[in-house]
Image (cartoon, rainbow, N blue to C red; front, side, top):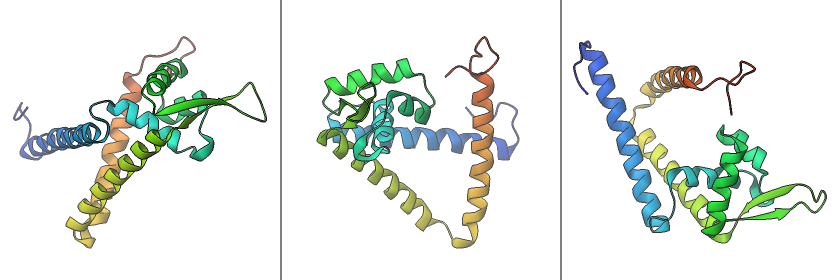
Length: 167
């Protein structure tokens, strides 16, 4: 998608955003294939990452849903798929038997560690390739870009009957 009546800066920015998104997605998908034999989707990997953020105790469905900004029923379905694939297991809280925690299995921990390593390597490689004097400008630009996308995403989310965004 080039041109479309855009000025040269806008055209180049559009091409870079589209190409960067595609490249990161392709690299992440290839990493997941090598990691899990095409057994994990990017959404599943991000769910594993959110569970891993809870440490060895794991996280509740509600905690995971809040971390991923998706509905608890969506998380429940994702957890069931990940449980069938052997990446997570559910366990009742010893102190409060009503609470159920989702924890990573050994397979899930390996996937989480590998995914985090991928992101660290990506960030380090980009950081090394940018002169120190330009890093602040890059972060400033990316912050503005991120704020734009977050605002736009909120505008596009369906509204619940009480006027807030559905989760």
